[in-house]
Length: 209
Image 1 (tube, rainbow, N blue to C red):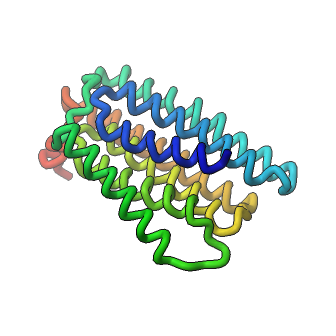
Image 2: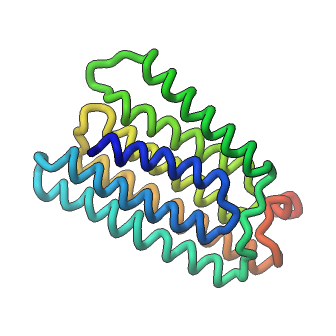
């Protein structure tokens, strides 16, 4: 069951590569949160109850509900055009993300480690590189936030790949990192929204001290 969920997560990365509307990006992030909830529940069911509750809260409440609602708020508040406006055609984006997943598969088979589960490692690296790809190839600042959140999801999965042992401290660090990042980037987006009509990264070149 865990492998099926991880495959679904990898498919969501490919779908994000061809998505043209910001609402689709947000929905994909919410689906990824649900997938991470399922993976965490299955893999960590035998750990300390308090820690498990914290992990499940982090995935289902924070990643699936709070972050999508916050991103929707930022988009509506700044009247951002609903199109993602990628630099590359959809077909090329799908090809590149597919190559990223295949490359991660090859890498996961090359690396040998007793405490690393290859399926987790494969999907985690795919998420890290796909998130970076989204940041590089999208024009809008808000899509950069979403790409960063995909990278965060990859970090979450990567932590599961090293023996499925996640302490409360590690989870608190991940949650705090996501919260602060989204908060700071949200303020950043709001400030740009007050200055520019379009939330395009090209406008960043016009910013001055």
